[in-house]
Amino acid sequence: MTATLTDTDLLQAAVDHVRTHDTAALLRALLPGLDGLELRALTERCRFAHTALLVFPPDADALRRTLADCGLTAREAARPSTVVRERLALRHRRDPAGLEVGILRPTVTGLDGERRVVELFALSVPPGSDLAELAAHERTAQHEAHLGFEVDRPDPLVLRGLCALLARHGAGPDGGGYNPHEDGTVFYFEAPATSKAGYRRIELYAPGDHRDLLADHLARHRADRPAEAMLRRLTGAWTTQALAAFAELGVPEAMDEHAARTAGQLAAVVGADPDALLSLLRYLSMLGAVVQDGPGFRLSPAGALLRADAPGSLRPLALMYAGPFYQSFARLSDTVRTGQVAFDLMFGENHFDHFARDPELAELFDRSMAASTRMFDPLPAHPAVRAAAAASTPDAPRTVVDLAGGTGELLARLLTAHPGLRGVLLERPQVADAARRFLDTAGCGARAVCRAGDFADVPTGGDVYVLSRVLHDWEDARCREILRHLAAAMPPHADLLIVERVLPDDGSPSLATAWDLHMRCNVGGRERTTAHYARLLADAGLELVDRAPLPLDAYVMHVRKSAAGKVG
Image (cartoon, rainbow, N blue to C red):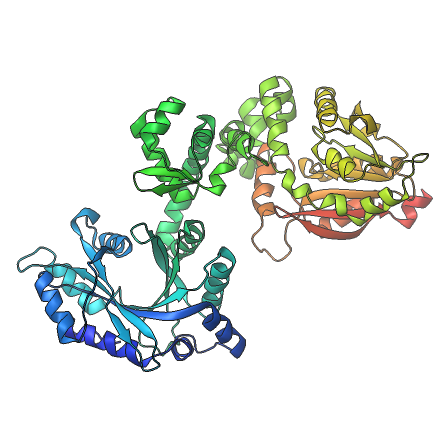
């Protein structure tokens, strides 16, 4: 669209556009590469709702005259526009409080009989106002002019699908926001370079509060601006500490997911400074841990994971990553320079010995390991486990052996899912005692034995052996040693299930890539590719049968003795 210099001409062009276009034709012009199925998916889930523009009348009477000149009537009072006000403030380095942007939506009937609106953003600029330069720039640039599509039944899956489809056809994220005055969420996109619609921006409007999805959309938008993206990455340490402080102070427990509470109310409950807590909550709202609702804050589903009693609570991980592992990461450059373990350099001993001397820290570490147990959810249904359970009888029960099984979370899941199985857990003495208590509490202690020992003490005669998140703790030589102990103890028919995060071969994003750095810095181990694991297994007389994905970017690798290993 070619910008003109008068509000009346701009508004008339928008009215004509709304009147002469329908949803399908406009989508074909916006996204020329759409195929028939994609066009149908879009038209079934969203509709062309408005053409938008920003005008700068000197006062309310002038705005009414401009509307009348274009045959329009504003039947309702203007509502505040939070999103456009914030965008103008950011673009022109202004205080948002001094930019009173209102929204009017006069209706227009299209040639197809559909009722649509012109979405008119209005910022009054009286003669002599210091906003005159801003208005002149915006009239020329037309940053806020866009085509709006309203999403029907905007559940998260539909919204994600629509955003992905727009991105696939070259529409890049261009900001957005949540307007509490209307309870609606706006997702802005830049139209692709091939667009023939005459407008450079697209809006998806979703009724309701969808700030969780909006956070992802805005993150992709920021990634397109290198300096801002880098600055946010450089402040990642603040994110870790903010989430940990939130958890440590017990703020998630004091919050509600439905009713908002002010910083002052929360500060009185947790014993914090109200102003400092307000700063923390505002920051956490950017991270999606809380939701700002008027003067108060609600707990988001993500923030609820930091409650101590939440199923799958991540609170122990937050405290661990902001505690000893945070301190050791300060010496990451030493690890990269020399290959030495930063944790050992920081604390003068490896993390196993360090935690063993501090019971509270050891308990936190064990609970932090249990915080990621969601990756275990599919394991009771693994074919090797189901086959062992099916073959188990009261007279000859089949046995699962969990090596370095921590406090018994995984073994308890397997035994609970399959009452005919028996279990053996091997761990360090102090952890074996905790595992025994956990298994008793889980109701399967009578079918489980907890043994204290090292990898040289692998129990013989098991039917399914489990090695979960162990090999990534060690370098290759120690891994071969552990696997050889296992191979020597395994009967020829036994299965071995190895649970690890696996580095992708193609460099695609994965939690394994981050954990690889973490393991080198804090433990002295590493993450590996599937091919790397296959080589280590072969050296021990074992072979990789297959692998299957698990939650949290983990995999379960199914292993059996090789022909040579069985002979040996």
